[in-house]
Image (cartoon, rainbow, N blue to C red; front, side, top):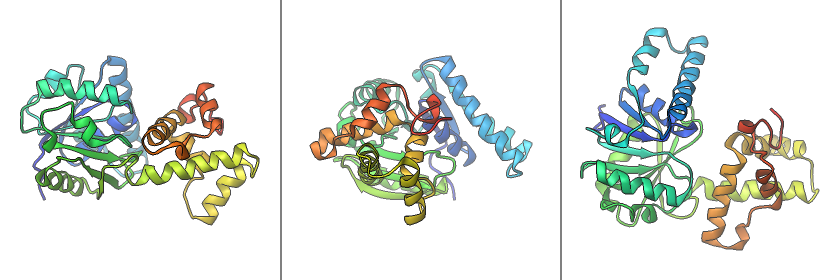
Length: 284
């Protein structure tokens, strides 16, 4: 099986961007990874190297395989340089509608007309982001899950004007990457995060209302629903600020019944964001 995509630009070198770049490179696709500052690019590349080194230690890859893979990943600071001769852009920047639109406006200037634009947004309407471009037929949601190198699911989301050809191309790419694509119409949170937000938010309310203790809630979900992580472990892993952004967006789109729990707001305001800040519902 071959891929029609030989070179892809990934915008954003954070957890998701670097993870997506790794997935593409493992499949033999050349990846241009882009960020606004060298320090962010360096962190992204280091994250990829840390993952690869762990695979070597576990005996799942050898040095030669890792070196071949590394040569597929090319860091850039300028969009104009990173978008030459590509067939697809995957946007993986901060979950902010205004920032994403500004990026796609700039990409529209630099990219050839046939380039497909994909967004890794976890909640924002695809059609709304597509208004920043002149190619709504070539604009699609391609939502990977964290960590992309290990999670098999990709939500493929169709906007109002996304063409069948674009959808077929992205589904084929997902299969080439050995991921499982699931189709969704656009709606706040799509499939997974629409359901996940309600689940997590109710967990926060159970805790803040004193219904049960943190450890008991996590244990109940792991043993009662066979989840690998409880809601508080999962929240810390995702990042409480990211969870709040998703919840705020869903609430703004669907109504006050989705209002984030006050406990979550307080923790984010206090800088307790989970693993990445050293403390959240747990300490790290």
